[in-house]
Image (cartoon, rainbow, N blue to C red; front, side, top):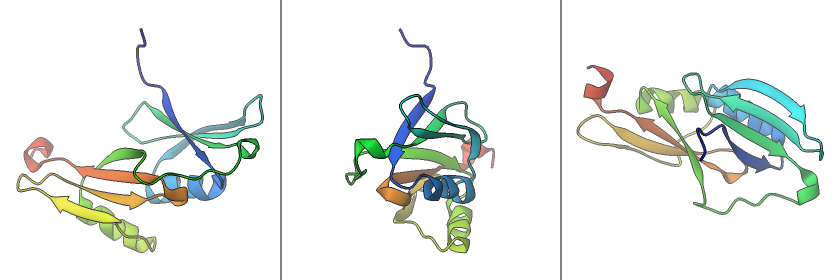
Length: 131
């Protein structure tokens, strides 16, 4: 039996462009970077309050990456979808869907990462945050 999730891998065409997005826009931290024995360039990132890592992989020998719409997404918690939307605007970006807010203060929105991977941003209900 498995004991915990360690990382999720996303293969990319342009590693550095995606690394900049995940670090500068989402605020993830680069944990490590190396080349695998078979030649993949790998960068591992993590969110400040998470243990699980995201592995970004560049492996041209496997051919170009074509992300199918609505195939997969990563979900991250944000304190405020409104504030994060303002942060996106400062980077010249906007939500691709939403934000969708509920009466309890919770909500979600989506942005598109480079290469077409989708990112979901989730805001917890106000009472959960202690308001």
